[in-house]
Picture (spheres, rainbow, N blue to C red):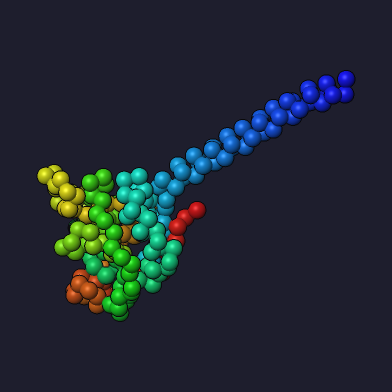
Length: 208
């Protein structure tokens, strides 16, 4: 009789273990799904001397660009840099230069992602690049208007045109507009396009 009881108890204990395992797996999966959903649109805060700007990034359509931008944020690259280029009615630009016009070191360039990214509408942010479309590093700009001329060209089959919009201003567009309205004539890589009173990014951080 004792052996029979042990024989009955073993499958019951096994069933309980399997049930607990399934519950654990289910909870882990739910947490993973929730984390993935949360991370699909990470937010970054820029504390500036004119106020806070919060960006919501578009990891779904610009994964490499977002990863690159977040790397610079977490490394503190943007802290103490300025918006060094203002073109009223067009864009404001920032990235790697301080108030004295001195540049900071950057990482290797990233590939262009305009084949999947949305249009450069007002409030979106996009990576800057040179003549080589795959030369974007840390320089980015915020669109002050709907700049569809900066989008990928319709006949581009090789993803070589346009500027990749990888996020948008979630809050603080009034701060962006205030920067755009500053008197110009300061120092920087675009002579005459920098604000006379520097618009400083005091701290950039990923919001939890």
